[in-house]
Image 1 (cartoon, rainbow, N blue to C red):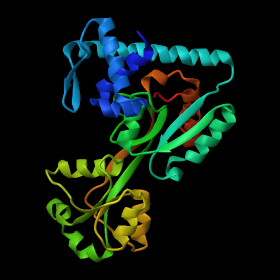
Image 2: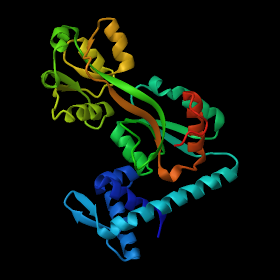
Image 3: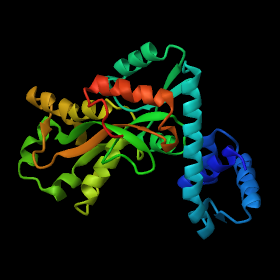
Image 4: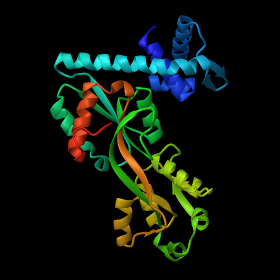
Length: 298
């Protein structure tokens, strides 16, 4: 039994699709299929039911998944301890980012890591919240910033800040917004972001609680586009409060006063990387940068 076989098993189980799991593991789909088959032969049980376009855990797979995760966590701990004994932390650390680097205080984090671990090769990769969470959950990404209602259950994380978002609209909509209820707000034209992005997830959740869907007329993957498009009069958007309030004070847009959406900005990492020296160092730097208690629980 090999660690890479267990990692393939856990990744496919979490993602539920061979093609996407192979992409997350940076191998071909036949390689993943072969690794799963070899593991099943060694264990003597079938781990998955294969279906067109999707795979599902068998009852045996469901029972063995937690054990496989424990083995991967133990292996990660062993590797981390070994690196500590080497005295100098080398290798690479890839951090997923989303949104505005200044809002993440990314420069301060990277500067602290470079000073603390000069031999570490540090890289950043931008992406949407769902893709970053999947990468961290399957240990194909070592860490990432994440924005969502809470820290996902399949990873560990350090809470950094509670963010608030507001519903904003063009100035020309001021009178219409004054007496608008949820139905009227949903029917107005909306500017959205890609499906897997954190802002779109917050927007969907906001209206689903009212049993409604927003009337989206435009989708943009540019993080700064909703602000510009609202100012241009195209429609409504969900905008971070620290941007929305100053813009409203400058009379560039108006804020619908009847809701305020909370989300958590956190730094997430795989459960198997809890003792990795690079992750431990990153958490230490983040606590300093964000002014958090030195031993805040992850």
